[in-house]
Every structure is written in structure tokens, then in C-alpha cells.
Image 1 (cartoon, one colour):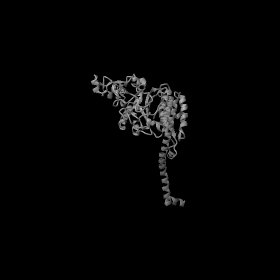
Image 2: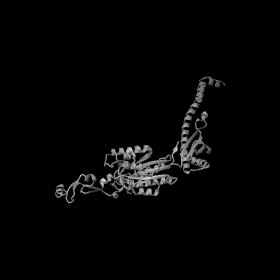
Image 3: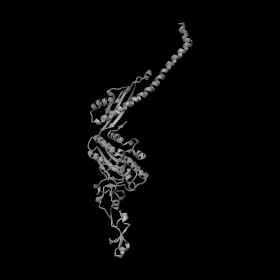
Image 4: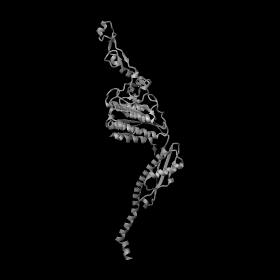
Length: 448
């Protein structure tokens, strides 16, 4: 007893008391630190639950319609398979799947996280949960593929890889369509021009004055356009080519005559419209707003309006060949035209809540030429930029793809979102890029 009394009252006792007090104070400190660690770990578990719930929502949406019993059973199976290992206690009843409206699924899951450390302060569990919503079976899709067909696409296997990737995209979109016509696609090959085809020869939206000025014949040799011809004179007596001899022999020296060629000789191409009408999608009702017919300066595949003949779409892609210089504006503009109801293409549906419209714009080079010749790249870039801005403002979502070369800043800014811009460094990457885009277009979108 004497030894014990000395321990409590002496230095040994005081040191022991301090140790006991420190140990008691350490408990809440350790508990607070443990709670922070457990909170971080619980949040990581919640992220895993969210990803698994998102995957479950998408998987169920692709199987709809399902009964409530099927939703509950299959939902839990898919969720468990997607979840992996977590420190959260859950039962099948903790996953609640409801259908508050036609074409909509709402998923909620909750559970109890089992802490590793904070139990020392009496926290044995705390709740974690996740929420997801998905729509199914009600969205329709119209997609315009504006594809660079310029000469530079012949290098580095670019055209070959583009054809393969684009056809894979067509297959993906075909599978995404639950009903015929739910998904439609247009093909817009472009270089300096686009080719609408000679079947359009009598359409009212075509403008012929420029074509007729450049295609025809003059009754004075050496004049290859109307403007050059009409600046010349000829003798009414065709055997005389000089004014003096013409008049000396009783002829009259008169203005030369230009005879436009038959429009049936038109090869089916069109070029840029006046001013910024392409960038504004102006309705073609006046001479300056109509589309100028032009002889095709290079070989070019004809555009294909929106349709869901999947075999024909792939055949059209296969027919593309690289040739000519680059005018990105005209490719983008005609992709835009293909998604609107007015002339020059009227196959598109009217805007509706259940309809999404996308443009996929691919090029491998800088702007180098348009209707006004080899303008500086910046002048053509400005038209492209304006067309991008206005198309997005009109509600169209734009993917852009730069293949090895091209104005990266212009294309990145043209995309609706930075995540919708792809910078491809090798043509072999195109298949993966188009697969990614196809997956995004075909999938239903989650809202958290």
C-alpha cells in the first residue's frame, strides 16, 4: 500500500495522471480524424454507386418496355454486376426504380456505409445514396456528315480510313433506330464546291446568271466568257475581222454576241452564295440569295439528302474520291441546309422536343479557296466561323474532326463543346473517333 500511495501522490502519480488524461483526450481526436477519412472513403463508395446506377439506367432503357417486376429484378442484377466491391450495406429493396412518365426511368439507391475508424466515437454507419434519370424510346435523330473530299485526303490513307469509319457510324445509327425513320443521315461531300446533281436543273433555288456568263460561245473568237465577249465587236460580214475592211466592204462593226450554253451541259455543282447568305442560312428567294450553278472544277461525289436507306448511304460514302481545294464553309453550310425544311433540301423534320439534330464536320486542311478565288485563309475562316456560330445558335449541335492538318482553333471553336472536338494525328484513329461519336449519338442521355 505504501508503494501504491507514493505512486499516486509523487512524481510517478502525477506522470501517470497526465498519461491517462492524454489518452482520454486522444479518443475524440482520433475519432474526428477517422471521421474525415471515413467520409472520404464513403464519398468514393458513393461515386462507385453512381457509376453503377448510371450503367443500370442505360441497360434497362435499352430493354424497355419492362414490367415493374422485371425492372426490380433485372435492375438489381445489373446494379450488383456493375458495382464491384464497396463498403456499403444494401439490399434489393434499397434500389427503387420508378416510371413517373412515359419514356422515363428514375432510379434511386441507398445504403449504409460501414466506417473503418470513426466507430471509436460511436459512429457505426451512415447513409450514402445515388440518383439517376434516363429517357428511352422517344428521341429521334437527324445527322449530317460534312466530309472533306479534297485532294489532300488522298495522303496518309485518310480517305480509306474515313470511308471505313463513316460506314461503321452508319451501322451504329441503324442499330440505334427503334423504328424506321427514327434516325436519318445526310452525306455532304465537299471541296471548293458541293455537287447537288443535274436532276436539280429545274429547281427554283438555283441561280444561272454566273454559269451562263462562263459557259457559252461568242461570235468573236478568243472570248471565253460573256463579259469578255460583250467588250468586243464583230463585223456583220463574218469574213472580215477588222473594222476598216468590214466597213469598206459594206459591213457594220457591232457588239459581239454571247450565246449561253444549253443548261443540260451543267455538271451539277454549286458554289458559295453572295455575301454571308450561306453563313446565315438565308432562304433562296432572290438572285443574290439563290445558289449559283457552276461547272464542277474537280471530280466530286453528289450530296445525299436525309434518309434511312442504310445501304445507299454506305454506297455513297464508298463513291467518294479526293480532289480539289478546301472550302470548309460550303460543307458546313450544306450540312446545315440538309437539316432544315426549306429549299434547297426539304427532307428534314420540323424541330420538336423529341428530335435532335447534329452536324459532324471533318476536314484535313486549312481553308484555301472559295468562289472568289484563292482568298486569304483568314477571309474564308471568318465565313466558316460565322456559319458555325449561327448554326449552333439555331439549335444544331456540331462535332468537328481535324485530321492531321487544318485550323485547330477554328474547328475547336466551331464544336458545340470542347469535348465534341477531335484532333486526329493518324488516319487510323478515325475509326475510334467515329465509334465514340456514334456511341454518344446512339446512347440515351443521363441527367443527374
